[in-house]
Length: 99
Image 1 (cartoon, rainbow, N blue to C red):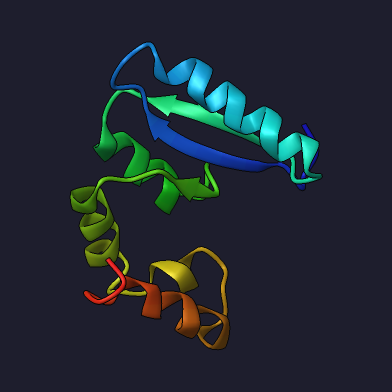
Image 2 (cartoon, rainbow, N blue to C red):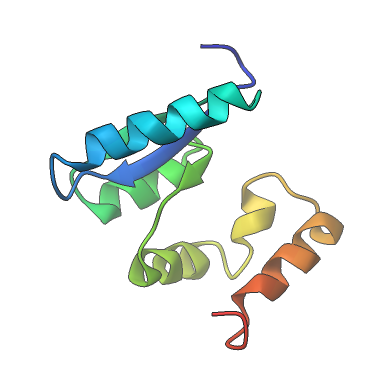
């Protein structure tokens, strides 16, 4: 795995998620965006891994997302390394109209 590989965290709520993530990994590789995944047994552990920068992206539930927002003071995108300017348009995706 290279440094450019995106590491996504997901919760293994069922064994059937493994082939799903394997397919997603293959799709990304075929399109020049290498990624891999790390499976967690619970969302709390995944949130901790995200905040500790052990994973790049978390496939979260709404509750886990709220936990990340609270832990980062609403600055989860900046915590992930985005500048405030880069994070602004992405933060707009969290509006009630979008969801």
